Structure formats: C-alpha cells, structure tokens
Image (cartoon, rainbow, N blue to C red; front, side):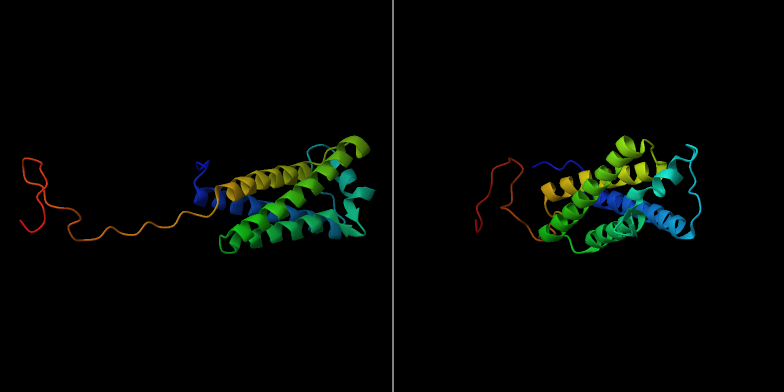
Length: 168
C-alpha cells in the first residue's frame, strides 16, 4: 500500500491535535467544577449544553471522560510503534468518536443547541480517528536502510564499458 502521509508527519500531527484536545478538555473540566460559564460566542448555548442532563455520565462530567480519553490516546501514541499500539490508538479514537457522535446527536436533536467547545472536540477526535486508520493501514514506520558498503561492489568496467572478470 502506498503511503498517504509520511508516517512521522502523521504521528506528529496526531500528537499536536491530541495536545490541543487535552488543553480543551482541561478547560471544560475546570469550567464544570468551578461552576463558571464557558466562553461561547453563541450566547448561552455552551452553558446550556454543558449543564444539561447529558453533560454527565453516571455523575461524571463528559469533559472529564473526554480528558481521560485524550490522555489515553496520547499515551498510546507515545508507546513504541507496533501493530498492537497502532490498534490501541485506533480503538481509543474509534470509541471517542462514537461517544462524541452520540453527544453531538444529543446537542442537535435533543437540546437543540450547539456547544462550540464540544464541536471542536468532535472535530479533534474525528481527525484523530482518520489519522489512526491511516497509521494502522500503513503499518510500521519504515526501517532505516543500512549504509552501503564502503568497498567496490561490482567488477571494474574499463572505458569501453565491458565488464572485466575478477582475477584477469
């Protein structure tokens, strides 16, 4: 399979996206526990979404669940590049994507409001899922090719281009 993206570039992009997602979910978790209004250019939409009954799962804020998920993704990206770790990253991002799509469904069809921060997190996890699929399908990072030998590799060729047999 041809490489869609240079593996190191993809890996680094995924690290950056994950770091941004962690920063966002730290902020949202902080906002939740402090009981303050999140920054939102859509009026009170973010506050209403983040204080709705769907903003918690069994009493745990979904922002904290997202934070833990993104930390898990970061950890999986920092493990040695093997098929198992790429599969772990794929599984974590697929789970996060599914959870995020459920919450987005609730925002649109139940609450009837969109939270900007939630939508940003949904974009992050979608990009991470796409990157994870590509990483998994591409396989391991290519091995560093060995250095060429330093001695002569083939029979010497005279100026007329005909090979000279060794020992003549």
